Length: 450
Image 1: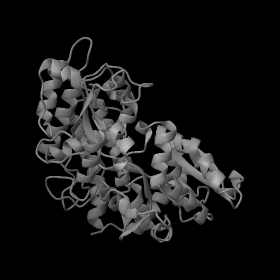
Image 2 (image 1 turned 30 degrees about the vertical axis):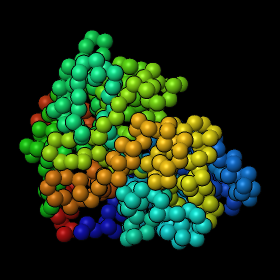
Image 3 (image 1 turned 120 degrees about the horizontal axis):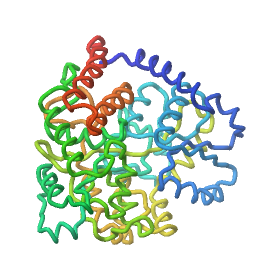
């Protein structure tokens, strides 16, 4: 077992550096917050923006609590929230984190145990959370964050183009079928597929890690020996790089989730493999030209099935918060059953945060609106098992990430090497040789602590 105290010390040191680079790490006093002000750090995604707009309803029902939102881009939010929580600065009462951070931070004592709050809140019903999501946000059987929305990954494809070309897919499709379809549909006016190539452990590596897993690869063996230069990983990464270079979107090395969403929504690509949360863009007439034309299929497989990832944006309370009771009131409002109906009635049922509660899929209006993608989203999330992500055994959990603190840095550096291969600046073999060295350095520290 890795030495958690030494890991915590290294994280605190690292976040201390981040704190110098980011404003607002001085503590609650610098924000001018009162005892009844709940300060919420959240990612500026569309579902979170809806929550902020609806929060006046919460304040009307709780006139003694004022809400203060700090909204940041995903990369900024990760850095700032990690720095603040690790340093115990107390500037945030609610933080938006994920199933990557939650179990680790719970182990370090950085988060408040939410199970006592959950059990004391009438009608909150934690058993209504999708089990795979609930377990991913738990530590030693207790929940330390609760899901705002959950996601897996699937293949999105232009159903009309597939029908015209006579292309059919297996259930689940294979990556060979996907590559063949991309080649067949690729033309001067339409690229065959969009895949992320932008560096980042939460960008390129999210889809690519699922490809590595299903091709039989892994980051480390059971003894923490790095495996990024193994034949399985080599084959998976070469496949991914070749596919996006030969039949993918323009500028693939700079394309992330947002860029691919735009490509498919504007009718420029025939397929996209990515997050199930993409439907909020693809099925919204205000942002998409292909509403009603998209088919949805399970994450493609090679050897291991299922291969979809598991992720949740969730809400937790830092242990340093002095307003935990008020913070929980807000969290429970934003994540309960009634909130889903509030969003649907206010903004439309395609805007409801998906993938957190089973009861969401039983709302008749939502079931009708999400008929094309709701059932497969739920099935994909339910079947994802982050404790069994690979063909061969591994000492870590996580599907599209390795659930160790070092992965934020390790994954980003590895992704930079592979993105350079996508850009044509080096070969896949060269990229993975360097990636192997990075991973070996991390694996060695875990072997020392065994």
